[in-house]
Image (cartoon, rainbow, N blue to C red; front, side, top):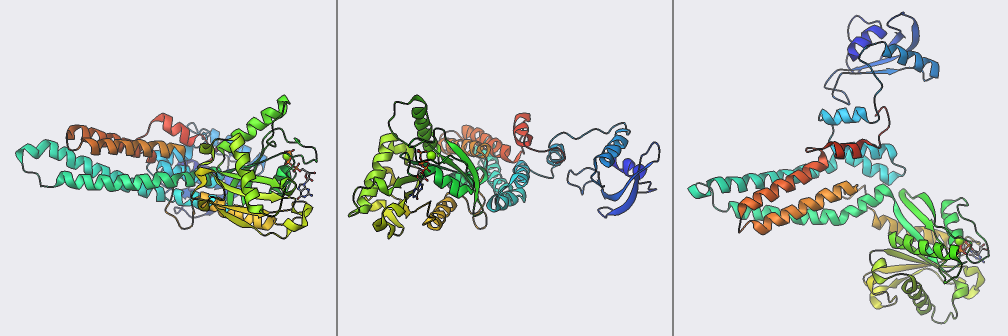
Length: 458
Ligand SMILES: Nc1nc2c(ncn2[C@@H]2O[C@H](COP(=O)(O)OP(=O)(O)OP(=O)(O)O)[C@@H](O)[C@H]2O)c(=O)[nH]1
Ligand SMILES: [Mg+2]
């Protein structure tokens, strides 16, 4: 069909050389009226994005030109507008892309930061697919061995040690899957943004901080305690890494209904965050003799008062002591780290962490470079490094299939010494799960989820 369109609208007697730009006058096939002058690119099957015959017309983008060309295209009986993502869906159906590459392509289109673009590009280029395909092959091989063992073991013409080999392969695969699952949260964070919550008592400068980092006044700043009531989000590019920073209501006990809802929202937001910026003001520090102990005590108290230990157990924390301009003695301080292994911060779940402390004056623009550099370090450590690390999964969909696959392999290993028929069934399930990630095994539901974010024309 596209060849016919090309010949008629480009007034050609035969198809031009594939994949070479050809300057032609584009005409209406009915009236022969000249519509525009533009480039025709002919991609005969299978060497096109979709794998089907494809014609690309590069014409002037004005509304009248495009409308005239679309009207002419409509005069061919079997043409219609593509639906959103239809080109990519056809590419997938024709085996040009697997689902992880499709998702990578969507992420490349939507990438907002440099690190996101790198990660998406690697996924689009098939790196994740390569890993899952190799794992799937291991499962398929093990399934075949187990089935052969079931069919032939009684005749004893099967090699010794088959089951031992299967066990070794499956144990290795479990180990790889477990590691990949642990790392995977980092890939997801890079795709979706690291969630950061700023929390602290009223008036310490939380809104001032989000405004500084965002470089625009996203939140109202005022000397009145309890100015911020709602959580206010700002999506930002922090040195190439995506962050979603939330300013929150100051934590205090209050009888004001609206403010207490704000406090509850601040707590919820903090529970959901990957990273907490705990902010204090020097005006809240009573003595400067044992500053470290006082800061540690205040932070511990604040978190203990509003959250459970388990709420902070998986979070990174950075402490900001603001308004140092109001106490010249503290002003001399430079940043340091609490080593929680030495019990300087007594939140038991932070045992293995080092918590950086930075001193700032937002109004005087002091210490803010140190804050940004500490924050960037933590954000980077929470994300996958798309330049060096092996690719992480990027979607909850991947995680679900991977953990189901891991469960099935675990069940296969548990049954292998007692009932190999069960083992074979578990391995078949594991294979289905991992096959669903790449779309080797797909359902309309999965396809709908994957293609829903595409735009028309891709
Ligand atoms: N001296 C001094 N004042 C500051 C500094 N940072 C912020 N402020 C002032 O402190 C007051 C409170 O700042 P906000 O940013 O609104 O504080 P907040 O923590 O968001 O307060 P709530 O929304 O009430 O919880 C404002 O008047 C700011 O101008 C600083 O580094 N030094
Ligand atoms: Mg505020």
